[in-house]
Structures are given as structure tokens and as C-alpha cells.
Length: 250
Length: 314
Image (cartoon, chains in turn purple, yellow):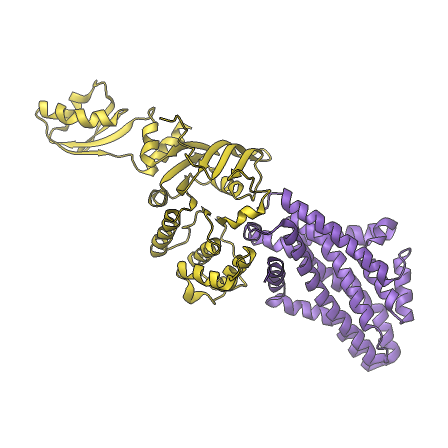
């Protein structure tokens, strides 16, 4: 196993082991479960309404940011708290490889949980309303949003002492305030990257319309969203690698 | 005579040149110049002396605020390839508690780029006598077992530079003896080993050479006896038992070698700046005066005493 793969595997093992994995699983299944129960009890229209107003909102505004903070901000945050940075960095592995592996692990973890939530919600929609088209948009949107979130939160977790708190501050300040009011931030907002990808792939008109309203000037489209997510990831990977080279690591 | 400072070795692997490190207003290390070669060097000092900061800089984990550190001429911070040669056991009691000892050491071997990490991990765990506990989670380990696991992870790639920060912390006497033997054997195999400790007896048992630090500075360097001998401004203290203490005391008062004489119940406590001459002259003086000396014991050759002096001198 290469050093890159070892770091990814060990980071994921730390993230997904024990009680936390059950909590993340519960969080991922929550929107789909609510929708499944509501849809089965009250019919197709209610199921669609729940999907639009509850499941997708919980997915993109709560679940993915929460797992991205857990994985992105803590990819290095847990090494620092656990005082294992020396173990990780005192190896013949380039700082860029370490940064890349941590980003990959954070993205994989966040995407896995986010995609699970998206698939379950889309499945619940299919069961409740017969609309079976939303699995792929949900997974792609969740994956791209998770990539952008994880990448942004990765260096924050490296340089800040309270990584989770710093992640929450980022969400409130940038996502809730700047991205709503400043177009440049809006284009690179992980929330909008995910929802614009979803809107670009979905055939479900009412959800697409909702996301288009929320996203404002950010155009729907999976290709553009993927490019933005990739650009954010590359820039943040470079910043993280540079910080690993230049900062005191313990 | 080469005139070389005792802080420097003839064939250095690691060179520390005028290194200072500060964190805001706090100075952790101040203008350190020293070098390390093959064998065991003990880095000795009380807590807060700056040992850990120096070791972190040697390993490239922390950047000096001023000065340079090189390993075979290369800056460890800019050359990750050097880490193929370095093993570090940091002071912190830190492991990935969700891993087993085997997984932990295998991970270390994988990160070190070994071709057979599982075998290397098994060998390293056997070396620290943890083969039987290798598949237990590290979270279940005692402090001493975690420490041995960390040592295994540090030696799994067979480094020729080993940096150990308080490596014997938490180990019981048997484990301690084994770790000391292991450290000694690595040094005898040609490795450059640097061991820090604030426990004086440990360093005496492990190290060939000592760098003593206080308040972020190098206070003394060399072997223990050489450090003590270099402190000419501080008198040696000798306890002497004789059949007539008062007569011997009276004889020594005013003697040019003696700086003070006191009677402490059944013995004389003599302070001198020239222990060697006193050791030769005192028996003759006593015989000439018909006094029989039954014990002559320099009391301050332990590291504890050396450190007391170093602290006072600062």
C-alpha cells in the first residue's frame, strides 16, 4: 500500500470507527426516513413536497456541511488534538502527498455519508411518489458539495486550534452571509456548487426551481459545478501543502 | 588538543549552529551550538529546559527562529527524504488508539515506504517484546506498552538517527532495562541516538555523552566527570571519616586546597577546588599527624549534584 493510500485508509478508519459512525449513519438516514414515513402515510404529493422542502434542504444545508466539518476540519484537527502530527509528518512522504491524502480521505468520508443520505432520500421519494430520477443528481450534488466543503475546511483544521468551531464560523460567516450577498463568494460556495450540480442533472422541476431561486446568479449545471469544486480543491490542497511545509507542526 | 568545544563531536551527523527558538515573548532555546555523532548523547535538563523544543527542531518538526540545523549538511525541513533515516519518539503519550499495535507499527512502516511493512512491523514489535499483544487495540494498552509501541514504530524502518524524548516514561523497571539495552544496541550498531530525560540516573545509564541544558541554554557538555571537572568555580564536596575529626579539621583549616571545613556529626565535610591534589595530599597530612582516615567520599559526582551546581551557576 502506498503512503497516500495508507493515510487515506487510516484517516477514514479514525473517522468511521466506533460511535461516531452510528451517529453519522443516523444523520444520513434522517431526511429519507422522515420522508418515507410521511410519504407512505400521506401520499405522493406530500412525499414530493417533503423531498423538496425537507429532504434536499436537510441534505445540503445540514448533513453535508456537518459531515464535511467532521471530516474536513478534523482531518488534521484530530492529528493535532491527538498529538500524532509528528508520527504522520516525520516520514519520507512529501507534504503535498500528505495534504492530498487527507483531502481525499475527508472527501471520501463526507461524500460517502452525504451520498448515502441523498440515495436514501431519493429512494424514499421514489417509494412515495414514483419519481425515481433523483438518485444520480443527489449523489453528484452531494459529492461535489462535500469536495468543496472538505477542501475549504482542511487548511482551517490544520491552522486553527478548534477546528470544529472554526468550521461552524466559516459556515455562518461565508455560507450564510457572504455567499448570499457577494457574487464571487456565491460562485465558490460549496452549498451552491452542490445544488447547482443537482439542478443541472435533475428532471424534478419543483426542486430545480427551488435551487435556482436559492442559487441566484449561480447557473445550474453539473459540469460547471465540477470544475468549481475541482478548482477549490486544488487551491486548498496547495494552501494545505504549503502550510505543512512552512508551519511548526507540533 | 584540538580546542574543540565539548558540545561538538569530531564526526558530526547533526549540527546545530547558533540556534534560537522563541514562541512570542517566550524564549525556548537561546543560541545553541552543538553537534551529534554516532553513539548515545543524553540531553539532560529539568522540565522546561528546552530539550523537547530542541529535539523537535532536530527532527524538522519545528523551525528555528534563528540559526541553522543540518543533518549531513541538509536542512531536515526541506528534505523529507531525510526522514528515511530518522526515527522519533516524541514526548507526548500519543498513539492512534483505534488501531492495534500491529496496525500502528505497520502504518509507520507503510509511511516509511518499506517493501514489506507487515514483516517489518512484526520484527519491530518483537524487538520491544510486544509480539503477544500486537493485536490488541492501543486504547487498551498501559502507558508503558504504548511507549514501547511508539519505540517500535520509530525503529521499524531501521533509522540511523534515533531521537527519543523521555523514552522511559511510564515503563516499569524491567521494560526500562530492556529499552536501555535496545537503545545501547542501536548505538553500538552505528546509530546516532539522542535521548532526552530529566531523570538523571537514566541518562547516566544510557548515554556516552551528555549535553546539559538549563533555561534553554547549553549549560555543559561532555561525559559526566568531564562536566563536573569543568566546573572549576564550584568546589567539590568531600565527606571524610577519621578517628579524630576535630584534630583533622583543625589541620585543614587554612590549608590552601580547602575552601571550607565543617563537622557533620561523625564526619568532616570538606570543600575543595582541587579534588585530585586533595586526594593525594590528605592521607599524607593525616599520617604525619597520627590521624587515621577511615572514609574519603566525594559526594557530588552524581548527575543530581551536577545539576544542582548548573542551576546555581545560571
